[in-house]
Every structure is written in structure tokens, then in C-alpha cells.
Image 1 (tube, one colour):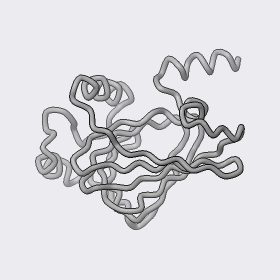
Image 2: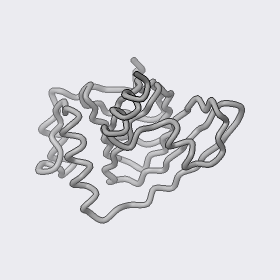
Image 3: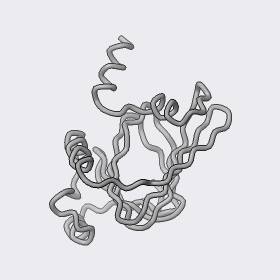
Image 4: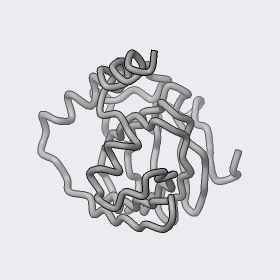
Length: 162
């Protein structure tokens, strides 16, 4: 584990108070349904546009998101593991694996099937590096090729593979 990734189990309540999300998010290890419920709730609120840049080379795509301080965001389920780089900033991330604070610069690998919730403690630049086997250069096609939007897509894909 990278030295810039800090687990925060003892500081959960204090950090939650600092974030101001006591009623919305608990700094505990959520299950996938907790994350989906939070995402559904967040979609009822005004949305923040995060600037996104895509870059392509042979069989590789990078997707860099610029996340403003104070933004609470959810991601999609990734079909394959991917490399993540936080170039600057810091975020609290909740997954089924537990909460973590990620402080840039740092890098880590996200396993396939993981869905994240992130709260930006500072303006943050987060890049995902993905294997792009079909060399798509249309951003929507690549995102749909590399991720699932929801659990139903995962189940449907699994059934088709059987």
C-alpha cells in the first residue's frame, strides 16, 4: 500500500463532522446497496460538472477528472482492474473494502467490480488508466466498454457469458 493512503477507522466520527455529511454518509464500510442508495439520493440534488479529459494511445485510454473541493461523487462499476493516479488534491473514498483518505500524489490499483464514493477534501485531479482493447476513441463508447452503469448490466453481461 502506498504511504500516501491512510486508513481512518479511529477518526471516523471526527472526520465525518468535519465533512458535514453526518446525515448522508457514514464513515464505515458500506455494502454495495449503501453506495447505490447514496448515489440515488445524490442524483436528486443539484449536480456539479467536473471537467474530464480523455487521451488515447495504442490500446490505452486515460480519463482525468478534475473534482472541485466539496464534491461528493460516485463512480461506475469497472469491468477490469485499472490504475488510478491522484496527481494533486485529496479525497475520502468509500468502497466495500472500507474508507480511505487518498492524498496526492499517489497511485493505486482498483480491482474489477469496485464502485467508489469520493468526497473531495481539496480540488483534486484523478486519472484512471484503462486497457482499451478495441482502440475506441469515442469517449462514450470507451466508458460503456470499460464500465457497467449498474448491477443489472453486470448480471446481464454475466448471463450472456454463460
